[in-house]
Amino acid sequence: MNNFPFARRTQWSQETNALNKALEELESRHIPVMDLTASNPTSCGFQYPDGMLAPLNSLNNLQYHPDSCGMLKARQAVSKYYAAQNINIAAHDIILTASTSEAYSFLMRLLVNPGEKVLIPRPSYPLFQFLLEINDVEFEYYPLVYDGQWHLDLHALEQLIDAKTKAIILVNPNNPTGSYINRAELQSLNELCRKYQMAIISDEVFFDYALDQGDHVSCAGNQAVLSFVLGGLSKTIGFPQMKCAWIIASGPDLILQASLARLEIIADTYLSVNTPVQNALGQWLEMAPAIQQQIMARVIENWEWLKAHLQDHTELLSLQGGWYATLRIPAVRSEEDWVLEFLKEDHVSVYPGYFFDFDKGTHIVLSLLPRPSVFQEAAGRIMRRLAKI
Image 1 (cartoon, rainbow, N blue to C red):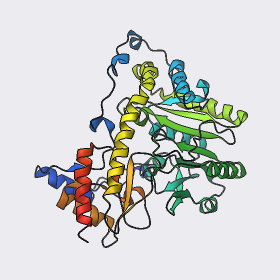
Image 2: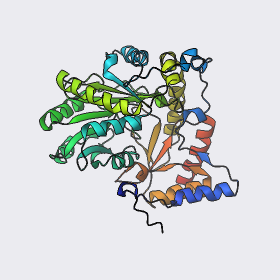
Image 3: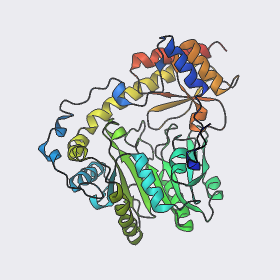
Image 4: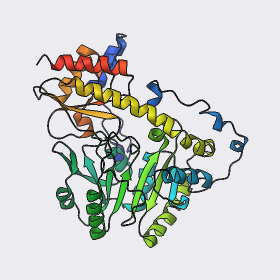
């Protein structure tokens, strides 16, 4: 064993789990697996607009004029994008980062001292644990509850707040439940944050992908309390390889200006967003509707197929937005056993619910991004196996 004294924050398990072992075994036998965990739009057959890469071919990219918060014209492009959605954000309230993961790190450095904590949703995005541990931040889960629709359990959330609690993280819409924050929930969250002097961090990378016209509210421009909204190219234009994201800061003016001054110093320490992407950002965001329409059409087609082919004793949980579908399946075996069976017997890869910290029931999560022919064949195999129960 290596006895070098690495930092305790990096003491993660590095053992290969049973699902990855099964995938590696199939790969060694050259057996193709149909992937219903796909989260990368560039691998799912979408047609990007002609000239998508043309903005990178600019002589301006031979010059470097660093700006701590990102080039002004790039931040103005983000501001313009939100203005088209009737959300007015000043460019000087926007900070560019290389990714939303980096944005989280900036905000943890701004808001949370070592040993203090934030609240994160359950079920939700599995990367939170790593992001927070790397930044020496403690966390507790607040529950999302399901009664045919997903809701924040605001009472349970408030019971978790103590003097060490510095922020509430939202995922809006949540991944994978696809549930948006509504206006009443945001009002309640604002009241809690005022009462306990906390900030809101709202991850809204999937916000543009709504399946219904419900009461969806963004935290961008939320003036009631200090609020930070995260977005980025990875989802907005389905371009994860062009590393660029943003933080939108809002809130009461004095505390907002104090937070922006501190964030500028944090960002200046890294200067992580490259010049070519910033120069291209305005043109790329103008292409967003064409890309989003393709992705939404794909998601809706796969979602409707799934609804039409459900098996007895299988429930498709409601979805307001995003790219994922959640199935509650019979609890005759564990989630891991189900997922291993789909993989080994049907050669289909799906997420087990525990990957997203579902703590009740037996769930699997499917990406709605694959081509319909792939999705229908793979999901059909799952449905046929479930029909055998």
